[in-house]
Length: 32
Image (cartoon, rainbow, N blue to C red):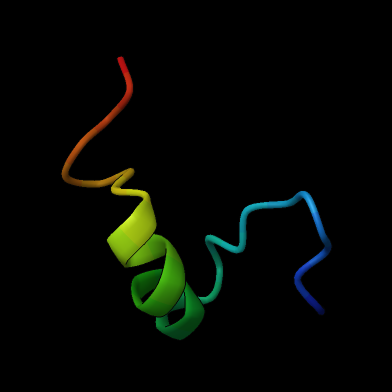
């Protein structure tokens, strides 16, 4: 299951915390 371009890889904790963890914070900073 490769991360498709356009889909947020939320199932990958390593990639999510590495790249998305610094750029986007869905857990600490929800856009609500």
